[in-house]
Amino acid sequence: FARSVGLGYASPFALLPLTPLLSAGNRRQAEHWMYGRLPGDLPGGVGHFEWERTERDSDGAKRLRERNRFTVCVADLEPSMALFKGVFLRPRRGVIASHSDWLKDTRTRRVEVESTAFTERYELLIADDQDEVILRRLLQPTLVSWLANHPLTPGLEMKAGALVVFVPHAIEDAGNLTYLIDATRHIASRVLSEVEEDRLRAA
Image (cartoon, rainbow, N blue to C red; front, side, top):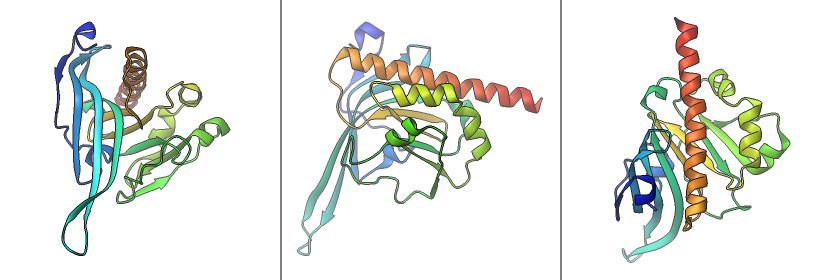
């Protein structure tokens, strides 16, 4: 698949912990990582991402408490850094996945949108320093509807100039990997359009 879309391949691979998901747990690595220029000319990569949470027992032995496997597509959107300081959209836990809350140590607040289908499917949180007006400019009804009806129910995180689009399981077929990459391209295009519109408003 990597060759078919013009990407390099590495396994295992270490991802920079730029967003809460990419820094979750106390052990993590990417596997089957495909990197380079994604379709849409986005620098980034796609592959499986595993994070684990371990704890020490009373006898001092380290025990695995939790292992979680995701498929993530990461795009470098450095121009978005100033506008999007922390946007976290994820499928509601208990419906699609049973992993623990990797955002619990991140200072966030919940945001609601006027879409029942979207709200039933997702929970939306933003960092304390994220401008909510800018978020709502991004989440126009067309994007909200697109997310609410996407077959993969992709989550996303935006922070530190990185866009991470993910599903909480391992995708192993080319069709759904393509869906995830296309979803990343679609969201990235909306983000960069908002960045450009903000630049024009400020000019």
